[in-house]
Length: 84
Image (tube, rainbow, N blue to C red; front, side):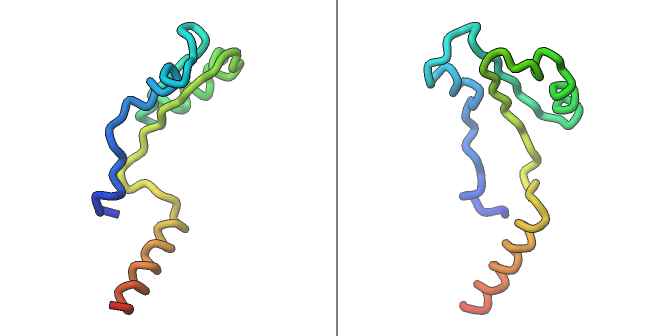
C-alpha cells in the first residue's frame, strides 16, 4: 500500500466538470473531506433534488480500502514472496 504507484496525483478534480464543457450555473461541485460533511451533504434537500449536474470530490484516508481488498492484497503479497 505504501508504493508510489498507489499515490493519486493532486489534481483539481472538481474542475473536470468545466473541462468537459459544463456551463457556469448548470452544475455544482462539492469537496467532501470528513464524514460530517458527507452526512450534511446527503441530508441537504437541494443536493437531493439533483436539478442540475452535481460532482462530488470525496477525500478518503490514504490507506482506506475495503477489508476484503486488503486481505486479497496481503494474500497476493505473501504468494508473490514465495515465488521469489
